[in-house]
Length: 139
Image (tube, rainbow, N blue to C red; front, side, top):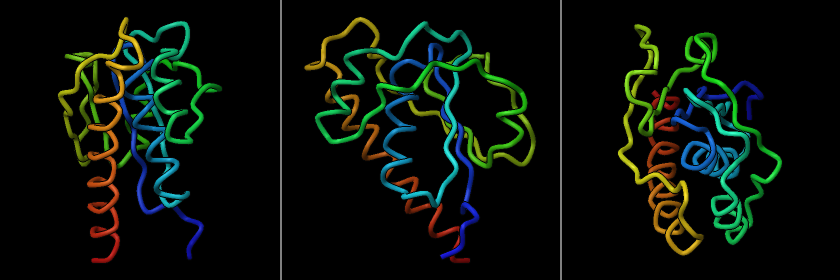
């Protein structure tokens, strides 16, 4: 297997504390290094949502060491896929990128019981994204 990633994916949400961190955790875990993964927020929080950390830990994925990062133009330019999750107009648009907007409930302020369905929806979307990336690479 080649050590060059098949694609680069940037997940963006407002605070980079819940949805985008869970998505990045799933993609890193499930793609096994085949995809370069980034996440960022238009207004990053101080820390990753503890309920998101716990929900992911339940599935054996540790995102506790992640830190919310600010969205930069460079991160968008360096990514093949830019997946937004409620960042509104704060996401820069560049030609040649594949943009997806995933309408997902914001887990901010919710307990782990309420975060689990959001986590599970993200996992389903990540599995479909990996299949799409694999199909593109096989062309």
